[in-house]
Structures are given as structure tokens and as C-alpha cells.
Image (tube, rainbow, N blue to C red; front, side, top):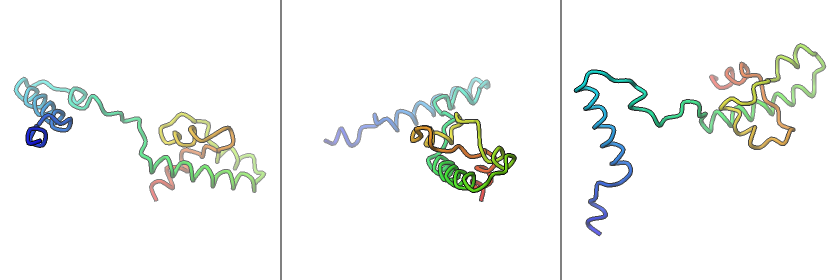
Length: 112
């Protein structure tokens, strides 16, 4: 048991050691790219909170659309971009009935 608890072969320790080696090597060589250090990170992933906010704004948008007949207003509220990271929850849950909100409306509420 002592060997298991005192072992430094955990995944976290291995990743830290690997990162330290890469940084040391890059500093010694003097040439480095950020992609070489952070190659496993996906910047296109949205946080769960952003997905939930997007979903909620879509619900509000759908309720507003039901109560207006202004074509210009309807076009301003809807979004045709269904494959953005924030829309992941709506895309997973939708069977055609969920509404994608305007991305600018989403950003407005997301910053509030």
C-alpha cells in the first residue's frame, strides 16, 4: 500500500512532469510554439453554463416569436448557426422543436 500511495506515477503527476520537460526543453532550445505545450486543449468547447444560457435564451426567443407577427423581428430573433459550441445542448435535446436564439442576443445575456 505504501508503494501505491507514495508512487508518483499518477496521471496528473505524469502530465505535470511531461509539461515541465517540454518547458525546460523549449527554454533551452530557445524556439517554441504555444501549440507544442497546449496541444490537447480544445478551444471550441463551450462551458456547461454557456450551453444552459443558450438553451434558456432559445426558450425565451420561442415565447417572443409566438407573440409577434413582425417579420423583421422574427428574423432578428432567430439564428441559423446551429453548429456553434454553445448550441450543443439544444442540438442534443432538440427533435425539431427547440429554437436557436440569435447569437448576438445570447452574447448580450451571457455578458450580463
